[in-house]
Image (cartoon, rainbow, N blue to C red; front, side):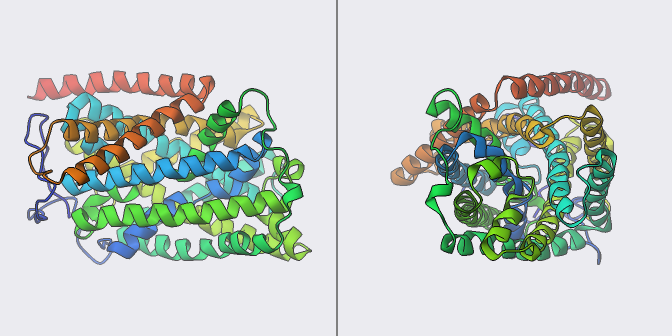
Length: 468
């Protein structure tokens, strides 16, 4: 449910044990009608899993193969950090179950500017990652219809893949939830086929060296983890859309943890199977590693075609969910006067202006990268989103640290307090580590995006002061 209005920085924090409060009548975010529908626990979990298990996992085994099997160690460490972050988001959503996720938590804890930075960085993350997902989808489309050798044909295909989920969002939340649920179920077929079936064809000799690149092992773990983070973006999905979830104080945390843990299990088994089936040299050059793995397991090309088709369905479903999330955070910020007012408009339960602006920006970025002829378009986009995603993650984690250090009176269970402190510390260390692993180029580009946001904030703050 959604609670309207804004929470000034000085307002008392909501009690963590408080009962859910009904949304006031006339809440514009609630959305009514046959095109809108609130998300229960199954759909909220599917939103988390669908956004986590999107296109990243289908291409990332090839991206991290040059580092060697040390990237599997990075995947394990990343999983621990992702689960810790999921637990932090669950606890924060229990305190404040409003649409906006990291934006809401940062603004309530630290004020307007921190909230704006969280919203701005998260918004950048969503539309840049949408462009990256479309590029990943083209790699699997090439298995079915050769397009990779024709740059502008591939670009056109990437644009079509981005706009189809946007149309589902314009149709309303009822259709967003339906597409998300169906695509989440369908995407498990190829992943489970490789994750489980690959263990029967596993060849340890194909794993390659533990550390294949230059530099230290720690540096390789950080660098590969920065790429792999992209496959875990989405742990905050239920929290960002809390206003559309039934009983959010209860269901957001459950959906976040269940979805993240389920995705982690599939990820680890699937990546291990691909490494032990395809071989490092071939994997490093692959544009569809899961298709290659199935072709090797069963011979021929039919398996690769089936996986490629399922991967396209998976990525389209992921884009469906990410397109909704890309509009939710600006929507929450616009209602507080920190984003242009147009972003606060909803139709059929969806912030349609946010959806439209996001898909246009992602399309322009896609065209730019294909026009520039970037050799590693996917890797470049992934590393930028890695950095920008850490900004809202760090601010949300810092908000949780503030609540714990403040010595909240309702946390009388000392054991629970210690557990929350340890989990939050792990999530904070995990976020900082990802900033370091993103690399200088990604941090440089990400900082430029953030500084542009500072100028936008100055304009919005001046307008608020003038109208006040």
